[in-house]
Image (cartoon, rainbow, N blue to C red):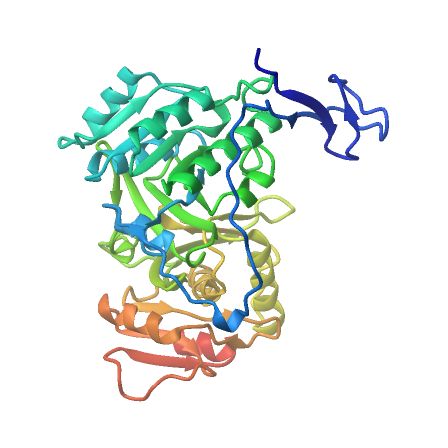
Amino acid sequence: MASKTKTAYFCQSCGSVYSQWHGQCKSCGAWNTLSEEIVDKPSGAKSTPRKKNHLINLIDVEIQKEPRIKTNSQELNRVLGGGIVLGSVILIGGEPGIGKSTLLLQLALKMNRTILYVSGEESASQIKMRADRLSEVQNPNCYLFTEVSVEKIVHEAKKLQPDLMIVDSIQTLHSEALESSPGTVSQIRECSNELIKLAKETSTPIILVGHITKDGQIAGPKVLEHMVDVVLNFDGDRNHLFRLLRASKNRFGSTAEIGIYEMIAQGLKEIRNPSQILITKKTEELSGNSVAVSLEGNRPMLLEIQALVSSAVYGTPQRSCTGFDSRRLNMLLAVLEKRAGFQLGAKDVFLNITGGIKTDDPALDLAVVASVLSSTEDISISEKFCFAGEIGLSGEIRPVPQIEQRISEAEKLGYDRIFISSLSKIPKNTYGITIVQVGKLEDFHQALF
């Protein structure tokens, strides 16, 4: 008779051990902190043989290039640093309905490789209906497995030996070694351990879908994000078309890159040149509109900034932002009033970045100030003007990094003039766009109007 797996309940606050679950830890008094964990596995369970390691000098270590799988999505390849590394575990999180399952199903359908798609949330017929809607040409080597038992999933994966495995989602899986329900801390940790061990033993890359909590964090223990190799965040406003894919952790590449998708009836469409999509063509020039040259990673991107300044109807003026940090807007308004003499204390100010894009690039400061000044004086800004500069508390316009890439992007899209800091160092006579360098807000106001 095979011996049974032994488990115990550990307090996540003080580490006390109990043989059964209690609502309150008797040692530290914390509530709902006991989590079931495996203490001893059956003697028949196979253990992975470990190779003997020895000391090695860092200088003598040879760098090995990680083999990667190129996906059909250039945006995903960019965010991952060139493709999916063999044996890596990727965790992708996002709000419900944002398009996580759609993105991964499109990936499975269009890759010419053996794919194992594990779903614990949808039936095979539901996935097939969505696959027919997303793509006319489907991968003949895409296999579905609707199962929540991690032991059965690992068994089938070892039999199939796929090139890529997708699990949707990690919160729905459960291990038979634990009695707790799926989605608990102990179940997520144990199931993740089994899948990571599978990935490292067989060199099979695995993509895990993770649910997020109401505050935007990936549900489950924080150790889950430490265990995986890559953590991707798929976000955006469901009321807008655009979705942003960012990497908050990447052991095989940069975390500064961004991928942009557009949600259409046929699924997610890649946006190769976001600047042309995000800037709307106007039939007439309106006050309060300006164009900022932002940078996400190494990717320049032009964003349209809209501002509306009006007299406050009530005693307390309103400050409202969409896609921009409201605290930074308050700082910029205070600088305009203190350093440039504009009376904005009794004004309502509304600010919007079009397209549902959210960014924290400080280079947007100059465009935000230009939109606010334009709306205040009701003077339109030429649609051929763009801006890239950070504003300090003393009213000085500070340089922003990688200014040459920003200027080149503005020139490529046909802009006539770009406003930047006078401290920015740029090559002379190399651009076909007029570069206006300003040092103070007063100089910027005169040069703009």
